[in-house]
Image 1: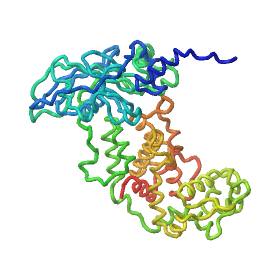
Image 2: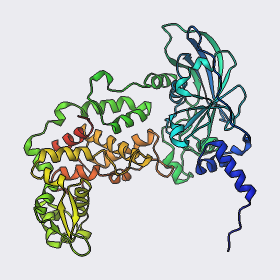
Image 3: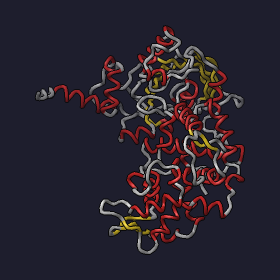
Image 4: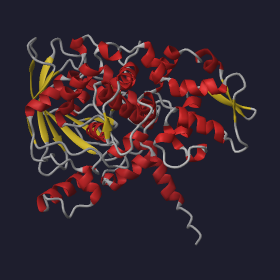
Length: 506
């Protein structure tokens, strides 16, 4: 039936909500579902830039009570922070002390009156990336904590995750002059665990608590919730030592004291996202993965490792590899590649058609992805890069290593996720962990604990081999004959070396 025209007044109101909130339509819809309409938006002009007092002559030590609004039972933290921290630093402290993973946008709202989404607020770099020109009253990175919070009962409000809309009230309990012995920040006390990321806000958190109370065995739970809630998670516990460990790790590289080489940005990004409980174990993996002896590989091992890609360059030669009218390689060529690489020994069915021999088709796709071959007048011909690399296994080795942590996209969330997954997989492989389901499961758990999810649920181990080219390339670098049904296999020296090489920036 015809769709009823929208009421112009409704459309005008929605447009005003979008403009005043600074949210995308999807974020606004989620905010409304989470009860955001209980708070009215301010109409009229946005707040002008505020005038903040100069920092005090001596830095203050400020004791704060941080309360997660609406949580029952109450979730709170008591913190001491130096006043000479920036508000951007305070954001990092709040994330660490509460137990969030810093996977979403956030915003500080100035007190003393609580005016979420309509009162004066501070901006940050992510605001600029997401919303463009933002009408804030100051920049987090430019303001000190003791320019905003400096007297008992001063209040500040903090929103984390514009979808789930976790609201925090921050209240000053005590102020004194800081000494040189006072740490930048520390947690003094707290109550109850941080809610799970992306659980649907306070309402979703309460649903999980009720399920845990009424059916701790989880037998009556929906499947997505069984997979979503970690078995070991206890919402009624809080460990102040773990909170302080997370605070102390802010800005610290796990390998800083080990003289580690410069790491690929994708690995640095993964390290920054790690759950505090995973830092020690992951650091242990990195120590093994970045041992210089792991990258030591002989010329013969390099030649054998790059052989699948070199085979395509050799077959292309000067004239190219002929294609059928449908764009596939001809059966005789497919059969030759499958035979020389041993695919015919383990692939199901005949190996003379590219569209029915997935390993050969994927390898051809990667050769073209690397820019070694291109289609030209019905043939696959070498590109200038392909001609330069042809016959130089060491150059081809470096090209493969460089490709393991790159994606076809430029910096979007999906690309970051693929890079995080690839980096985690490569660290495990370079450290000598088996290739297969065991490592895929460990990587999936690590990514989930780092704040990643797929369709709102935890990462499944079966997703890992299909993220980017990492699994394909590592498999082709390994032994030619891959036995069927083998769930996990130890990595070869070449596989470990290539994985380790990809993790380091020369």
